[in-house]
Structure formats: C-alpha cells, structure tokens
Length: 202
Image 1 (tube, rainbow, N blue to C red):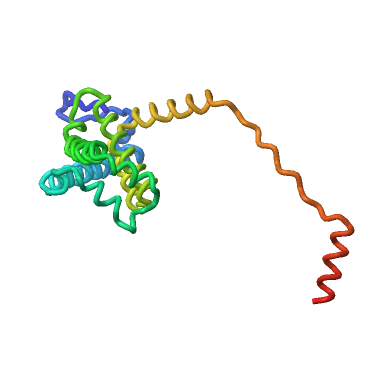
Image 2 (cartoon, helix red, strand yellow; image 1 turned 180 degrees about the horizontal axis):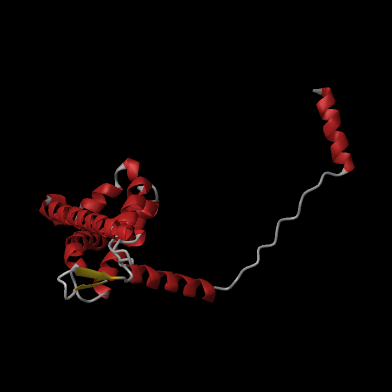
C-alpha cells in the first residue's frame, strides 16, 4: 500500500496487496489483522503460564530436592506404566528430570525472544517431549494433548513447514511394508451341520 499526498493536498492511497483501488482493505487483510493479535495473545499467555509454573516449581521443597517425580511415580492414579516407576527409582534420573522440567519452563519466554531460530524450536520440542512422556507414562491425556497444542502456537509458520518437511522426509525413507490380509475362515459343511444340531437341541 502506497500512501502519498498529491499537489492539491489530497491524500491518495495507491492500490496494493492490502488496499483496493477504491481505498478499501480486502477481506484477507482484515482476517490477518484479527489473526495476528489473537495469535500474539495465545503465545503471550502460554509464555506467562510456563514462567509461572517454572517459578512455583523452583520454590517448592520437593522440586528443589529432586524427589517430585519419584513421589509421583508412587501415586496409584498415575501408574500408567511400570517403566515410570522403574526409571524414577534411579535418584540421578529423577533429579535430572525435575531440574530439566524447571529449566525448560523458565526458559520458554526468553527462548521466544531469542534471535537464533533454533532456540525456540529446541525449547518447544523439549516441552512437547515432556508432555508426550506424561501421556505415555502417567496417562495424562487430557492434560498433555491441549498443552502440546499450546506449545505449537509458539512456533512460527516456517517452523511448522520445516517440521512437516522433516516428517515427510523420514516417512519416505522408511521401508514400505505391505500387509497381507488374514485368510478368511470358512465353515465346512460338517461344522455347519453340527452347529445346526446343537441349536436344535437347545
């Protein structure tokens, strides 16, 4: 859109991708104007949520001692897999998971402001890996799926395209397996007659 002032002191708006010849904004531009603030608010809310979660974890006694994941693995309602309990039996693994969780949650707002594109990607992938583990090991599906969706809003459009290209590249490299259908089991006349006799006797 080119805005200029003519000799008669009249403001002229030249047509462009965001303005028509009549000086009106097309519907696509209006949709973009509505979309960008909404996307910004979603990302801002997600960043504040993770910053608050990481802060409150860092002030908790069990998180500081690195025993939160061990205690959680002993709760009956979270026994989705026995592998969770076996992993948290190792004090080093349990402490590392606790501190790593605090670190990536506190780092998200600062990673979003980083000028290096790989920083927010790495932080978002780490958060999504954490939530996938929560779903697989603890059964927190209703928590993990919406949170992964919120994590994806922190990525840019080119990041999503990059991930999509990587996914399709890996899928093409995988060997294509052909699944053969199982043979259908048909009943012989003898078996059919036996079944009919049994039904008659009943």
